[in-house]
Length: 240
Image 1 (cartoon, rainbow, N blue to C red):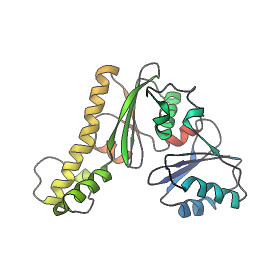
Image 2: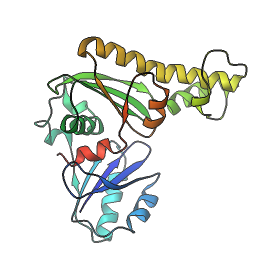
Image 3: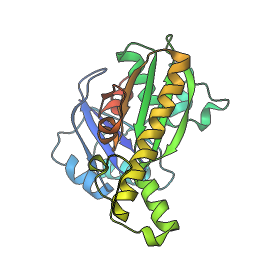
Image 4: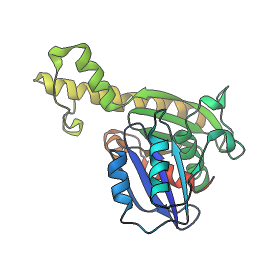
C-alpha cells in the first residue's frame, strides 16, 4: 500500500493507493498534528509519495514525523523530474505549480480531451488541455474565501460572516450581507464561467473537471456541465 500526501496552501490531503490510478481511504487535515493523528490508525505503508505547494517548514516537519513512526522515507515529487510526462505551456515550467501539473496528469490518464481542469481552493486555477492532451495554458483567479477576506478587509463597513453563496442568487438583494454573498457568487462562479467559454472558443466543447476544497461548491454554482473529482491531485501522484 502506498500513502499519497498533497500539502496544499490551507489543508493537507491524503489517501492510500494499491496501484496506479486508484485512491482509497482518502481524507484531509487542517494541521500537521491532525494529519499525523489520523495516520496513526493506518498500517505502515510500503511507500510514501508526497507533493507540496508550501514554502514553509510543513514538509520537513511531516517527514520528521514519518521518521519518528519508523515509516519509509517519502518520495518528494517535483515538477522538474516529471516534465517528460506532460508538456507544460509555461515559458518557464519551473514556475508552474506541482498541484496543477498532477491534476492535468490525472486527467490525461483517465479522461477524453480536450479538457478544462479547475482547482478551487485558496486560489482558483483553470488550465486547458487540447485534443492531444497538450497544455495550452491557464489562468489564476482569487478563491472564494480570499475574495471575501480581501473585500471585508478593504471595506470594514461590509464586514460580514462568510455565508452560503448557494442561497444567494440574483441581483435583487435587500441586506448588506446578502448583497456581499450574491456579489461574491457573481464574481467567483461568473468569472470561472467566462474563462470556460473563452477557452471553449478555441478548444471546442471540452470536458470540464473540477477539484479542490471548494470544488464541489463551485460545480453547484456553475451553469456549465462539470465533473467533480475530489482526489484528482492524489490520483495524479500515482502516475509519476
